[in-house]
Length: 157
Image 1 (cartoon, rainbow, N blue to C red):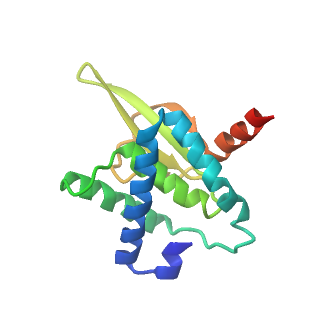
Image 2: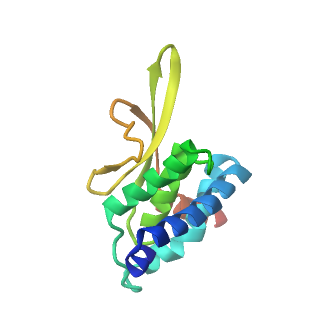
């Protein structure tokens, strides 16, 4: 995929910014699950063809750093990024290389309020969370792009 081909951090960051902006825009247009399903349907051909295209897996450390970069830009008021938009971006990048990672959404009670957060779980169980906030959260939702694309396909019949 693009990260190995272009290699340089600056190039990777630029591509991540573009992809994140497109994903964030899509997520803002519709209800979340509908936008997520549309994204899954659009990316499914890339997931299915990853082996034939001989796509190299994305380096997990580089993916983590890209997520941290997006969050830092948000903190610096140079970009609007949320844990959800960043986690979905990372999940989509993985999906396009044939990796089916989970999008996890968790909550915990904090000072009489609910705190929610999103992050990615790799097939081997490794967590990718640029903000490192998943530790003590109770997972309330697990979303998979392949599953959403398959649900869409079944709904057509």
